[in-house]
Amino acid sequence: MRFHLVDRVEEINYGKYIIGVKCISLADDVFNEHFPGYPIFPGSLIMEGLAQLAGSFFEIMMHEKKLPLRRAVLTIINRLKFIKPAGPGDRLVYRAEIITMRDEYGVAKLTAEQDGGICARGEFTFSFIDIQNEILQKSREEIYRICMQNAKVVKDEGGV
Image (cartoon, rainbow, N blue to C red; front, side, top):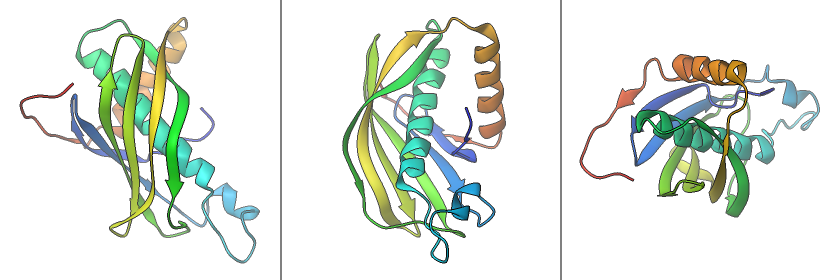
């Protein structure tokens, strides 16, 4: 993965939702050309950050349920809307809520908030594919460990 667009996971409720954070810095490479004199964090990277959080959540859920490890691959983007731009100094709070999780696919409702207001929202569908590479899986586990080391785990009844 070239860009890690979730800096950390703040909260997780297994089977229901996960909350992650992306802190945008003027030092981010994207601001060299997007746009000179008026830096805006690209919507495609907000979308990617939301997809990374939701895809990771599905993979974490598989691990938690002791299911065979599979990779969550983004296949459909539904009703994605960008409501306001984000730029240097902004802290984006990403939230992914599981709508459906089946053997072959999962659907998540996603939001990106900035200063308490919605920056982007949508619904993403992921297909689950078999992992053929043990090195890749170990790398993913290390990323999860780093991002989740201070995450608050919320427990309640229910969940998917």
